[in-house]
Image 1: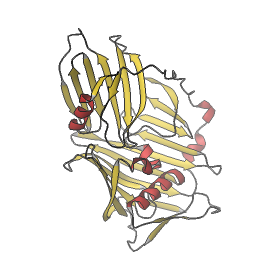
Image 2: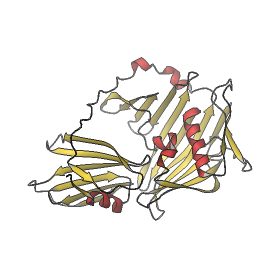
Image 3: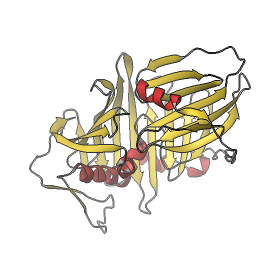
Image 4: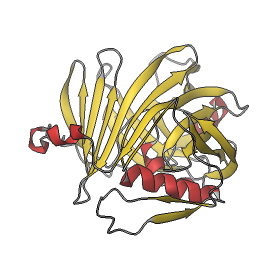
Length: 332
């Protein structure tokens, strides 16, 4: 089986009531997966299955207002033993390549020695965890079926993803009707204005993994970095407000390399958006200026509260960043 499409590809009939995805194995010993096509949840299940079970090569472009487009090549493959392999390659400039073999992710970047991390997802321009487990965000977002349209020459189902408490940006995704793979993704602000877009320009779904993966020698990939285990140091600061469904996934205390100051770092996540928070005691350091910056789709807010300096960074509205920062206080 070879399914190929591009911006001049042929569309698929809109008359299907249920949509199916064949397993990647040519033996077809696995049952065909069938997903309901009349619910947003069913379509997102289909998306998750397709992104983790199919063999594909996808070309897409990351677009942000006022910024040069960034073209990527994204490959995914599954061996006959069920081992997942993945590659993400930034095609412009000096480039950046990421390779994943199961739970080992190796990064190759300019001016940085190659390294590997233990992870089941690639850190790229798209929310990898959402593609794998969309159910993880159902407490934070509502899923709304919008309708069908034509994207990259293919019939596509549009799904709108809306923050339940209006504290985060929204997202629109267009899924290929036949395979469930993503064709387009828009990140929009609370007024519906486009912040960034991922547009697929070509995709090939094949029976077997791309030949690229045969050239990879797992033993030659960089060793996994041995990260220092997190200590159980008592938290210095408490966070009273988090958006619905967002939880604390990491907390650490370390020293800034330039100033040597101790900083408490916290990462919050809802499975779709990650928010980084840096907290430090600013007493007698002479820095007391509040700062709010918007860089493309990211918000950076620094708030001074007496002797506490808080910086919040993430893809979220400034009002939400301010509410998080304002809720932080010295732990009892």
